[in-house]
View 1 (cartoon, rainbow, N blue to C red):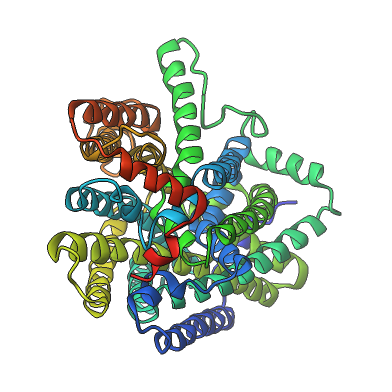
View 2: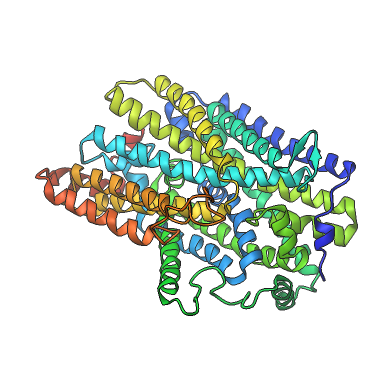
Length: 561
């Protein structure tokens, strides 16, 4: 069974109308939620943490929504459809990462902080330099993660409008439509954050989680129904349609053994380890995930939120296995690459092909519209979470604590956060235009590597090492941040390959596309050296932090100030 030709046909005008109408209705609904939330957002606590009034289930849905982004629905499905077994490594890594967040971060962070990661890092150290570093790190990680969502949005818009290479719609070719999609997402995410704050963002994420799970479940069931719910037959057809040996075995993309070149083989295997390290350690350092722990009433609710999130995310990633192999079998790798070279449109293309197989062209258009709308909702909610994380850090950590020395009012802080949201959105749009050729799951892995390097080591050392001090925190954050970003800049991600950001140049001396294997140890080493070089010690503050982190004593008082 191969419906590749049908999957890439230009959709009719009537089909386009159906997809666009459903798409616009979804956007209108989320904007309506934002307007409602804006009327209930009056204080800094409302804007930064949604008033801390969300239940564990609600926050768990929002956590899942944050995580089930374009990388999950579009990037991972695309990776599996093009690289088989190796694509599923992302699903495994993303899911296992939550154990680190659950066991080491969730409760301790909720008890220790107020709005941002900087609250925890600066508690027992000098406020201004540490909060500045935390703000810089949050912004860099968020920008990298935002790139992935924007690139996915651009690819999705081109498919949604049915624009194939060489064709136009409303005067737009596929490349122009992708740029328009990126700009539209930038405008919408800025609107969500500016007017709705964390309260509006969280409700949009809750709604989106339900829509995305329902859409993915529907497409999974329909795909399996074409094979009589025989997963083995589906995977067999996927392997045959891929035209690649070892499609169902490891080594097609990661850890590839190169005959006659043991050095390159070694680098390939080390890159696989580096990717796994980034995925497993990165989650607990992602700013937009960390701030979610502040939106619930207490630490027990934070833990329960993670439990709900793990169940939701685990179920979803099992479905990406079916979607990825289904796209390979039904759409075909050639058709997927023809629409988007990085495979980011595999799941929506599968929806169109399955719909056409079951009920004809109109059914294909409707199913495409439903899945594309769900994916677009995933993108919107995730970018909103990223923007509010970065804008809150800029307003709370940098503006209030550094520039105003803690004297800014809540109203001033919220105003600065809204201005920062506009700035972050603009930067993300501009950069995303130049990153359209990269797979979104891969872009997210880079964000995870930076988060694992710059944030997680410093956060854990602050919570658990008595001797840790301001110098160590600054060395750890900046050391991890500079090493991770610097190694990426001189890796094949940026130059040296046809798929690089700058394909015509070659200044890649670092052989690993994923830097975590090197940058995480550098961050830890920098933090230790920086700590030992300074005589600053405050064991009493560390004892107070431990009591608060482990018991929650004083957490509620801190949350109200």
